[in-house]
Image 1: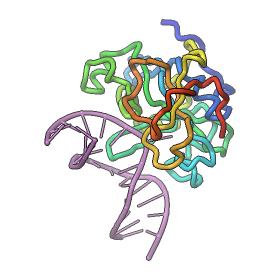
Image 2 (image 1 turned 60 degrees about the vertical axis):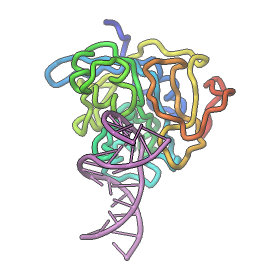
Image 3 (image 1 turned 135 degrees about the horizontal axis):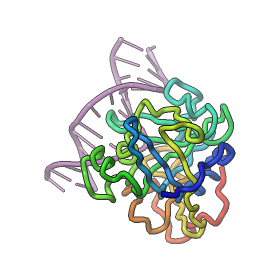
Image 4 (image 1 turned 180 degrees about the vertical axis):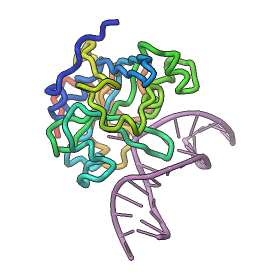
Length: 215
DNA sequence: CGTTGGATTGGCT
DNA sequence: GCCAATCCAACGC
């Protein structure tokens, strides 16, 4: 299948709020240790910025978030709630500490393996949430720091970007601080988005990404 | 060292 | 809608 070329380092080395909406529609390819190839199309992401109280990087580098302070285009994987892994793409400059959380995707290739990892066959339940997405793709501690630009286990390919008018923008899910920032971006009407509820209810108007995002 | 709560999920009321 | 599951990083003493 043709997923297009890999996205270059320069794509990731920009503000997370700029990278995030442009990640919607892109293809994440995961090659398992046994050679099995899995592929998904990203439909929902969230930006985390420097000086963002909701970001793991807000209080500076620690052993856990160190990858966030490294070069853009690497995967930051963290473990939470005692049972789930979540994956992010590092953005911005070195030492900046910004990233985009991968929240949901449409399964494209390797659905059988994903179903095995997830314990369910329903395509809509395979990658519709950050924990589910990581589990479907078998992303765990070993993938923390993986280079999406040059590495073999994970790649981010160009796919087809989604037009800004087809991207919905809401507040982020599950954060207790920084709840007013509308930094969650998802494909309008996607059947594969997460069931997560925005921290602040989305008003009927002004959910498009057409207005520039701020920080 | 002890405590607290989390960028979630799934099962049950 | 509510809440338990189940680790462990971060922070305070």
